[in-house]
Image 1 (cartoon, rainbow, N blue to C red):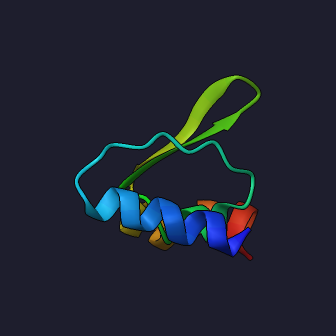
Image 2: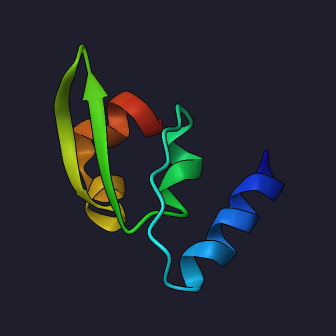
Length: 64
């Protein structure tokens, strides 16, 4: 799986926009500029990767 994300990182670095749908939040946040976390069909969290990683509620629920 890490090979896929490494390839996506190279594509992103070339300036191409990519949409990633991934259940592994910790891994996805390493490769995205902006993220949206869906829960029960609604956006529960949104922001930059840094903002999401530092949000205490999100961290406790999805990154702990």
